[in-house]
Length: 137
Ligand code: ADP
Ligand code: MG
Image 1 (tube, rainbow, N blue to C red):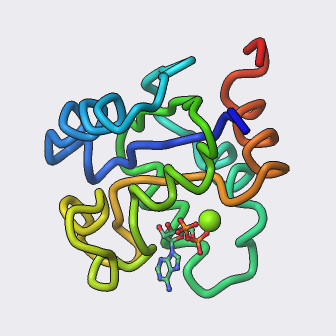
Image 2 (image 1 turned 120 degrees about the vertical axis):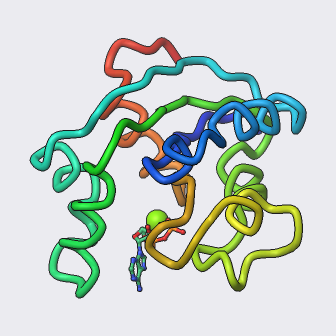
């Protein structure tokens, strides 16, 4: 099924000037970028976006990291986009990510890991709406 997912290039990847390489890879792997923008999350926005992780030991660290610099958010479209993008990113922990995945190539550790991807159809919809409320899907 052709579907959409939300991808984020996180502050670490932008600071390291890896955003262009990641976007190039996204295109080469056959995703269509249906929406894209660069922004700097406020603390409130980061807390709202990651609300599902509220209460976890890494929550404050995650919010601090995600507000530490600009991010690039994209809505991506492809057959099985949600799984395909998570496969292309690799495991949350770059040390455990498969060779040639984005997190293996550009991630630093379990928190600072270059990219985000939605994990299910419901979360993809909520996350795309969070950043692109006017997008026609
Ligand atoms: P994923 O991004 O692979 O879906 P999660 O949804 O579990 O992973 O976590 C969201 C984000 O929170 C991760 O991408 C990472 O930046 C951060 N994170 C997750 N687990 C940890 C941890 N144990 N320590 C620090 N940061 C973490
Ligand atoms: Mg997740």
